[in-house]
Image (cartoon, rainbow, N blue to C red; front, side, top):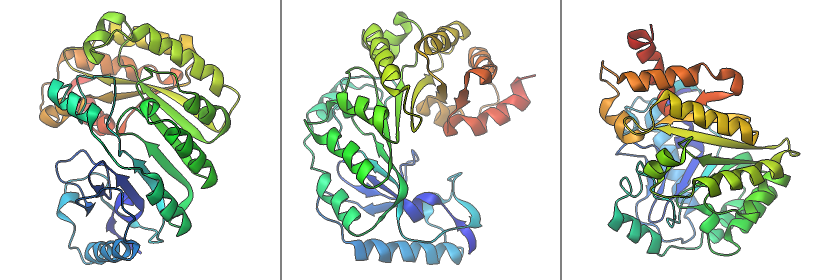
Length: 327
């Protein structure tokens, strides 16, 4: 049936440290499922009930308030079949990286970072097994491993998640800083349906140190080289290197060129470009965009032959900015 809705409401599950949502939107208000969660098994009847109510409301034009401004909330012929096509596992928060744009830590706030790195959480395995037993996981589901740094998970947990993805015929997506080399990640990209995404955000040591507040630049690129070697014979997996543009920090053509060159040297076949979220939220309606940002985006746009592509959080804005600034 054709009605206004979104894929997240119908088929997504986001498992956070203390709650569960239908989506991982970065808007202040998201579609909530369980406001207080500690790892207990889910009431699947309740999930089906609240999902059915949302669908009924959407069909009648009574849209959930958190969805009203979301660009992914669109009118189309939706598949209402119950089954998760994306499950985001973000229950852990420990991460040795300290990005200045990190949404979770408030831009690298020292106290927030300390709390996140020592925060206790629950074991996610029981609830994932519950979903598997109840046939709630769709074929080719995307299992997104985010939250903290997955290479710092407790021993055996990341290995379990890789195994779980294989047992459920899911596509596992691993988000990592690249600080630490992980045999579990190596095995995933070498032998299963997997994507490894590492945000480097710089092409030089100096700028990397500003963005990550760390001196791990050489170590990260060495780990990337090893991951690229592990992945090269598996056509079901890929390694994506990411550049988050931070206006005033790494938005120069020189830095962008240095990054792309390092990616090509590593043999990377996909490069993702995003725009720092806090800046974007504050400035997305501004008519005047910094010239350095315009030039940097223009450079990345010229690199399509090197498989450079823009993330969802910037692509729609580029279209608008092109009309105003990219003459």
